[in-house]
Length: 263
Image (cartoon, rainbow, N blue to C red; front, side, top):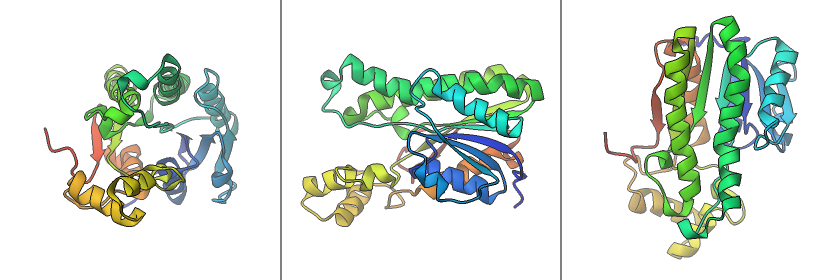
């Protein structure tokens, strides 16, 4: 299927790890031009595609960070067709009372305000060209809050709400806005030292791989019986960004192995 993404200009926030890296790689495969922002863009530089990929070292939790990456896209390619608001952090908490004001600010600035600011920077360019796509990477936690991720869950719920609001306001101007909500996905948050996998291994008294399988099949009872992969999320994102999804806006696509069973 030709997705018609060749030479489209894509900005991806949080582009150097996990889902963001998979999204960046998938757009490059489709022939798009990608401006990828990250605090540590080293992984992007390893992808090659020098003519179609601009890694940007940027802190997207700051007020100026999202403007910087959008400005880079305009400077390099003269337009922005697609914005992927992906950057996010998910610190584990001990519960609501353990989360300080500074904790709340850190998560909301990184996860939610980066989306606000990047969208605000990109929209004038999209309005001028009467076309554009904004895709926001939320989470199943936005609908099913987790005690140990309370502030993260709130930030993802806010992303879902703003996605709908932007779709309503800017649809008449030719701009589509959708959200993609992954479920449990095996990103570096799982495999890094001190990550989720080590925590589950200690909790269940198993090695890491056994603990992950036990978690997926018996704890979360995922109908597909496994965690998702970043590439599976990226495939949905790239489809929604394409003209094959030209009549899709204001929607939330879940990529969660069936973890949320309610309508």
